[in-house]
Image 1 (spheres, one colour):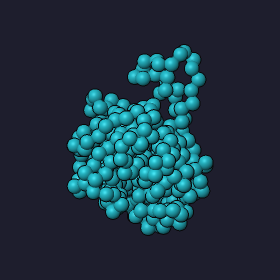
Image 2: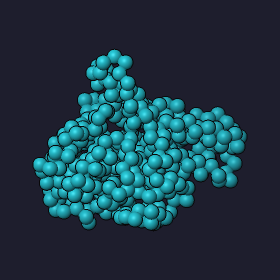
Image 3: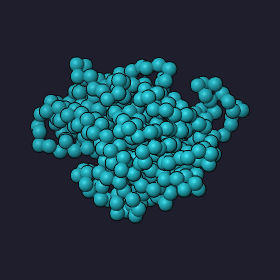
Length: 354
């Protein structure tokens, strides 16, 4: 376990406590969410970020809605929870974990329970289960990856996929962490990850906490780094995987995959099966969130572009399946053809609400 908590439920006050990732690495500050509206805003403004983490946060957001709901009639209560889920679902459109977690929590409302207090309890318990399962899932992803990693390995990593992007431990950064903890000789080149600099701010901070050696590079340097140094693997996380293996991840991932292919370097995607969306056949159908122009035109509030500069700011891009060597999940490693291997791991997960 890390010494910091990305999110946790405060039992005494029935509130959700989030580590404010906007202030890292300079300040460790926590934000308290008291209802679903505050939770949705925290997801939207990236107080909390990372697909698994926002899925867990959304689940607890429903628990907050349940404890703030004054309805005494079970049917009215269920209707209020559906409305809260719709609000939370709109906070970040690309990450499928958010919708997955909401559907999973809402499923407990189909119980025959006729007592609102019992329904509240069921919602909170399901949110807690989602949170606890995430940690174990991430550890399994890391262990599964060990079988394909050499004893000495130089990584390139994009964005942040560690304990900050999950409930704890991490997905792609969890793979790096597992390799390090199992005695592999590990070094990481960390993409700064424009425009919000999650690599430079968050991944570098996590690697420092873990004692893993690294260097931060600008996003545009990755191809040159691959040419100049021995790079054994690129590892990234993702926010949604289509049925054919196309993968949406933080913008810049597609460029990294192209560079890896040109240099014949394995390109691995790490994700829990909750990130796999078999209902979307290919990546062109994945909704891509576009964020405010100020993320590009300003750095920490200081303008760096001419006034009224036009901006295109997609938060994610889509890497075609043909550039992905393997997708590493808690239920095994998926290789091409992904249309079959992804279906197999989703079935192995046993989740009925896909």
